Picture 1 (cartoon, rainbow over the protein chains, first blue to last red):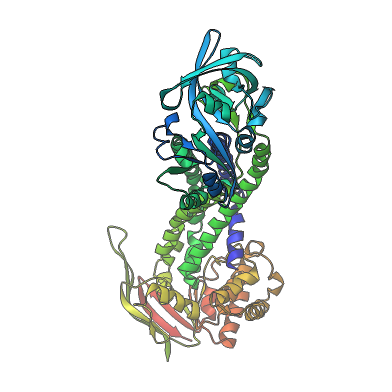
Picture 2 (spheres, rainbow over the protein chains, first blue to last red):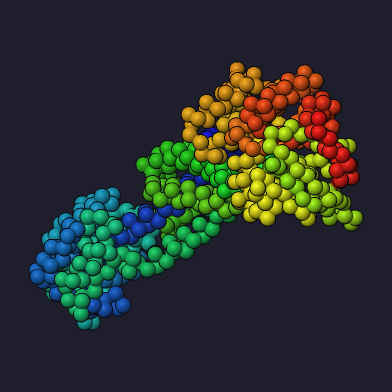
Length: 406
Length: 227
């Protein structure tokens, strides 16, 4: 009967309850949508950076990450590859040479990142073949390059044009080569799109005079959330004096930090929203308490324990919060699901303006379960805190005073 | 043997600059099964006395003993429990729970006493039948007349088979027909259930029915007449 009592009490003043529930629903909807975009953007950033660029895990010669020069490369050995490939969750071991070079075509020159890759394995890691918008994908024995579209546009090169690469090779040698462009790729991240050149691994090793040396092994793994476990397992099998094994969070600390800072600011925004809604809820709880003082006095008189009255009041607030939360999630879910599968892409000036900040001009929506239940917890926490007021009022209630003052 | 005993009760309100002495040295004993009316003009202290006898308010000095238990020094939680088990209240404004049906209102005290559902249902229906409102069992208080609501309030007060029923001006809002009918019911309950009834009232019809009349004036008992 306590549940019945609480439920019916909610609907004593229908209009007020509807307004309160609607405000909770609106807050949950807004918070879910905001968090979905936020988390979707983070997921996309991580995916773009880790999944499509560095890989979730990399192995280098110890010290490479502190001093990223071609001199800090290491020998390709079957033994190392086998050890890494045998770790549970590792699907592919992808070798790379990474260095820098000036790329020139006619009167234009630009600093670029040059990646020497095994084309087939690289595709398994970063799906780079799908980024090709013109020309052909590299073969392992090609003596040509693939160039990112932004860079190609800057240099004004097209398929078949030859680009000169000038850089520093292994132990100070000159790295100079001239390569025809066989393919142009378009990347979503502006920084990558404006500066990347791919060469077949063997050609890059020749350009930089590294012999069979590599700068990194990037790993294709089964699940992104297995990173920490796989890093730990590899650490047991390989010599950590000679090699460093790094997960994506270590590889991109700036990204992690940027996400954390942005995440905090977005949480602050959501809490401000909740506080505003909280005042509305508090108003309702205040009125519900004030207009029932007489009734509380009567209930206390006839022998209802304070704890039971407090339980009924708490139940009323929990029920209202639950209805609001469920309605908010139910309304926002189809919207979020739709945009999860159909991200919003910006075009025109908006795209250019957003890309100037170095991020992709699109809204991605996350469907992480936590973004929904975290809103529920936030509302329940707030309802719990706000319900302290009527609970304290009931705790201090004197039956005669309560009945007389009404 | 007295079931209600009030000794040297005083009650002073200090809310204003000048203290108000609502009760001034009340000594009172009520026997089991009595049908007692506390009468007097407005402001004489009837409701205050009833509240103190029912453990709803504390006297400034003196003590109240109900069925051998001194309730004056009882802790809040224990006092609530004591009221639940021993005292039935009937208020002037009925004070039913508006969101519960007639039957649920009567059952409510038994629910607080953790009585089984079957027993609750049976007792509630028995009382509503005795009150002549069994056909209103599924209706909410707002759908009942004042007289019917007060009968539900009496049924609620009797539901837990308390030792005493304290009724504060129970007929103040009722018409003469409803008053007469309610008084008959209460007299019947007094006789059949053996409950001790104490009313505060200035309604002559209630006074006429009472077998004992205690008259208050300025917070003091000025007469105590048994009939």
